[in-house]
Length: 117
Length: 353
Image (cartoon, each protein chain N blue to C red):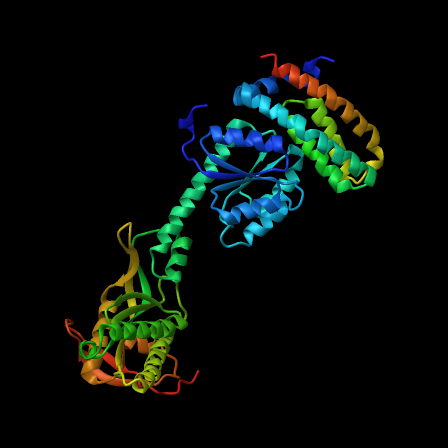
């Protein structure tokens, strides 16, 4: 999969222009440090049937990834958020698994773009 | 980004449970010249807001512990915090929640990811509005009474005079100079403070506004800046209460071997010219005109006739039958060419209401 299908280059370019390379690196580091624990929260909430925590975790992932232009990833997180809002976690297992897999791809794409300047 | 495009800088609080969002928003705001602090949830936000002054809050809706709604609710019930502008930061699909927040008192909203240009525009607009509100509040503090402050707020600080139908009252202490010479300065100031406290209570209790205090004299207005029903009757009731309070005060004075005081009160009703006068630094609500002069003359005339309360014909006509008045005949008041009908109000009368 190309990075362009994972991260919108226009959004990412604007972000870089606004933050500068150094701060962009810090921002990506922060995303990579913070997101795994939010994904854990999401998985735990799924296992426990805690729709509110599930919704909040998905919401957080959705909004932070959107900053980088990670459009498909953010959209998937948004779908999870909606399932949480509807208290419909029964349908969410496959999507959570996909989010976990996509997260690794996203991190690779972010690092690649970060060093491509 | 050029600094000069950010005209106002402020101390801002960014509240978001996601660290990436916090960092990014903080970076944008700092680039626009603001000082930024952060909170990770609603509870931390309230702690920060209570610990130090902020000019504006950027508030996420969905957060653990206390969410954006709960923070807004607490802010609008907090006298010290409710005027801080709050801008909601939300996802586009949360617009129904945003509408609820704006109903709850949030000033504006931004959708995430936040666009730097919109961010600058909204923040500057909010800070500018806050600056204007703060300026108005500062102006209000320079005015003497709560009534005047309310009037100013309601009229949007319209300065300039207007004709108003009102009742003016003057009151002062008889032979005050003699009293002041007979006791220590500390006792004199204490006496004046007690006197003012009692007079204010009687006057404001009847809806009057004390707008001048000079030495041992004071001026009060009934019916301005805000209209007052039965202002003639209420001014006379206030005068009777003032005399009663002075009697009680005299009992205390005697118990401490201190001098008794007597006061004289003059009341006149009619058209007055009312407005805010002064300078930008210090202003007051003032009433001037013939009616006000007549009240002052009547107050001076109480010494001549030996009656503590004198009122003019217009005021008497505004009284209900429950208040007894005694005609003192036509009197030529000092500085006036025409004679005016003067009435005294006997003190100690039981007013039928």
